[in-house]
Image (cartoon, rainbow, N blue to C red; front, side, top):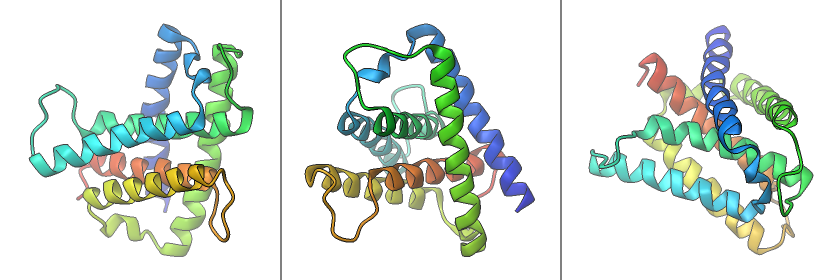
Length: 181
C-alpha cells in the first residue's frame, strides 16, 4: 500500500497544481455554484471520458487525463460547496480556497486508504473504463439524492458520492500516470 499512498499523493498534487493555477486566473468564482451544478459539471466530464473511451478519438486536444483531473477538482469543490453553501459572489480568498481543498483532499485520501485496506487494492485489477462507469453511476445516484432533497431512506449522502468519484478519478489518473492497465 506504500505505492498506493505515494501514487495517490502524486496525482492529487497534479490536480492541486491545476486548481491553484485556475484560482490565480479566476479566483474562487466557483463559489456561486449550487451543488447540483457541480454534479452536472462532473457529469459533463465523465460523459466526455466515456465518449472518448467508446469512440477511441477526441476532437478536442485534451484526453481523458484532463477530465479525470477535472473530476477530482470538481469533486473537491463539491465537498466545499456542501459544507459552506453557495453564494452570489466569491467570498473566500485564494488561500482559504486552497486550505479547504487540502482539507477535503486529505479526507478523500483517508477514506481511500481505509477502503483500499478492506478491499485489498481491488481497484488495481479494474479497467480504467470501469472507473468511468462507476463515476457515472455515482453521478446518477447523486442526482437522485438531489432530486429527493437529501431525504434518503438508507443511502449515503451526496458527500460520500463525491468522495467516491474523487477516488475513482484518482485511480484512473494513477493508471494513466504510472502506466498500469
